[in-house]
Every structure is written in C-alpha cells, then in structure tokens.
Length: 122
Length: 122
Image (tube, rainbow over all chains, first blue to last red; front, side):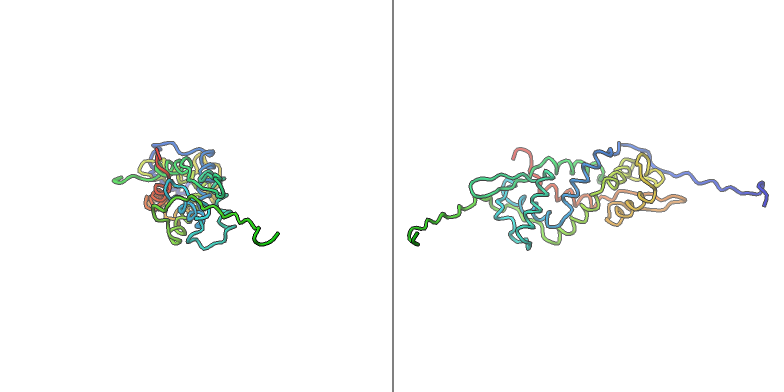
C-alpha cells in the first residue's frame, strides 16, 4: 500500500462539558485525604458516633466501649487517631477523661462533599 | 498495717452525659468506612473534584488528567475505585468514556457527618 492510499480516520472530538467551578488544589486534596482516612475504619466511626450520641457531643471514656466489642487498648488507639486528626478533643476532669466532637474538621469534609455532590433536579 | 486501717478511696463516678441519639450500628459503620476509604487518597479526591468541576458533574475521561501530574494508568486505577464505591458512574458515547458524579453515596456520608457534627451555638 502506498502512502497515498492510507485512510486516516480522525479521532472524534469528545463532547466534554466545560469547567464551571474550580477543582481542589493538590494541597487541599492532601489535607482532605488525611481527614477521610481518619474516618475510614469501622471501629473509629463507631467510637466517634458513640461520643456524638451523648448530650453536648461529649462522652466519658468509661462509657465509650459500651456495645463495641473490642479491647480497651483498641478503643484507646482509635481515640488517639481521632484526636490527632482533630475530630475529637479530650480533657481530664477529676478521675476521668472526657472526649468531645470538634466540628471544624468535620465541617471541612462536609463543605467538600457539598461542592462535589450534584444537587437534586440537575 | 491491719485491715481495719486500710483507707479505701472510692473511684469517683464519672459525670458522663446521657445518650440522646442512637449511635450507628456495626453494619452501618462498616458500610460508611468503605465509603470514607474510597475518598482517603489525594489523587482520588482530585479526580473526583475534576469530574465535579465540569457542567452537570460530568467529564470526558480525556479531560481528567488535566493538571494532575500522574500517569494515565494511575488515573484509570483511581477511576475504577471511585466507580466501584458508587461515587462515579461511567458511560461510553462514541469514542469516549464519560464519568459522572453519583450523589447517593456522597449523601450518605454527608448525612452521617450532619449527625455527628455539633451544631453552632452548642
């Protein structure tokens, strides 16, 4: 076949949609990924939910393993991860340590989800 | 020291708050943890954000690596994880595959976050 017989099929242009809002930066993505990772374990979510289930989103550590069938050191490990991620804060009062849900990090995740989730009636 | 001299210090009762809303079940926690895990990678979040940045929350695969400095197979891997988690759906039209953000899973995460996040003015 000579060159003149070559049939070139042009690649069809895609019908992609235009960019209508800015995507997140690499830096924001890294920060958000760490927050999502802190919440990517079932026991961690149950511990967080157990704190949030109580009045003022605060629980005594002595109440936290209630109904969660894991050892106390496992609960302690997950509390530490949640505290380091900024999802929980802790305070010692008299003989006990109390954990409280901190809203800032959770609100950052919610704000990201709001932007990427298509709204009803799209 | 005789037994009669033993001073027993009683453990102080904690001042824990009462349960005011039900915590999540083990089953729900497992399901939510999988969703959080799908979003716990920075490149995956950028890919999701790149789809969501376009009109109708839909993007052609050819546009997705724009500005994200990873190889095409890496993008493909992350698209697969997001699709398997139900966060994205895909459709082939003519020569191209288009990805779209699916709201259901993202709304489940948002609903969980709404419940565990303390509201303003607590």
